[in-house]
Image (cartoon, rainbow, N blue to C red; front, side, top):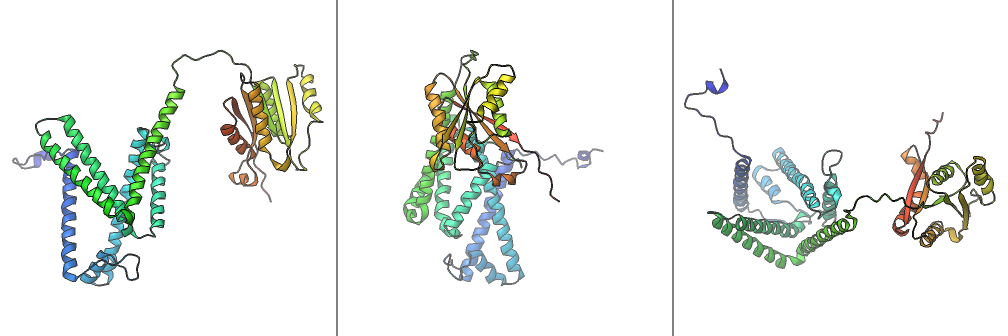
Length: 403
């Protein structure tokens, strides 16, 4: 027999509630519970003569701590109750870490925040938003020395601003939708928007010197950031927009520059790759006061030009430019050489092939000065539009284990 058939003939199946009805009923229960708790706290505080103590001073206790101690004493139940309060506060704080990243994602989808806020992390959460919220929360706790009462003006400004915006949004919604009952809803929401806006103005004026100015500046700063981020993305779309078909006209071969430190396998790999790109290659060596680095100009013919002739191919226009740098300035001669080539040949691209050693262990990078990474960064931001950066990684094998 089916489960529904075993019920009495007069019993009917309960209708399923929609998500909106369930949310409305849940919020009603929450509001009723909070009202009862607030009324009980007010009655007990009046009955036991409990008043607030000054935060940050010796002997400070919260209202809940004083109330539980006055009603049941300082026994085990007191500590169980306070532990439950801490657990509830932790759960309530978790809602911010659950919803703030989602809000940031919505703003990022509308291009008011950077794109990293859109993507989920390895744990399928919006890690970027969570990290930003954690950093801002820690900063507030440090600045206000953990005294939460000092954060009340900040919270009040943000809360009533959100109330005002939500009520104003619903007012605009009912004006757009219309209908028989829209006037009543519009009046209710318009009254709520007016009341919360007036309260917001009063809070900002009365609590401005107590911390409300921080929220005011943060809101204005966030608004400016949103506008600038959106403007930046619109500028990018305008600049890179293309509607014409792909132009397959072969460009002239680039001028290739290979910065090398000394003659080794790393430099050879970069030079071999450069010769495949163009017949016009410049090898650039910057000599510093390092006894391990030798001048290659005397050996360049034997190291490069003779092997090219032995292969029976036309020797490419390959030259080595040795620049002696005073005061150990390594990057300035490199940038000057590359930018001079780019200005002398505005119709051609200058490709800088950067040989780089790739270590087999991450901690081995602590032993290097990362010259290649710095050079790529400088070329990217200070080189110019006609410069292309190409990386030729040289992978080191694993080191043999020591006995």
